[in-house]
Image (cartoon, rainbow, N blue to C red):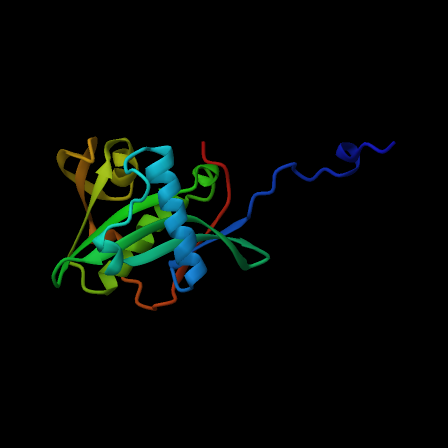
Length: 185
């Protein structure tokens, strides 16, 4: 009998080596983003009951992190949405990363960068987000300023503002950022 563990030294778990962070373009990307948000905000965190959709989904620009196999999109593993409130004020919301991918490839940070850079290209002079308090250190490392502590949906949040000097405008509508996998410590 052959021992396949001795013959094949491949890892038992497959992890994609590349993630593309981009504007959601196809229906399957938008549907998987909606499912991921429900899984994170409704099931995992219990912030919403049943569905986290709201009126902003109608006007928001969805951004997704897609795992790639052989350079081809495989599945949505992260998402965020952005929307404008007037000419120069933009907001980011509903940042979610699949639990299995939270420690690989800097997906959350790259989604944040893409969100702010996209809004910057679309005229943002101010970019804000209501950030869950446990995520405040990540945003501060990414050049965000905490403005005010508050409660949202019964949970501690912090109103934060991105320093746009650290986020170059990303103008191409199909632009994407690529991040490689690697376990964060």
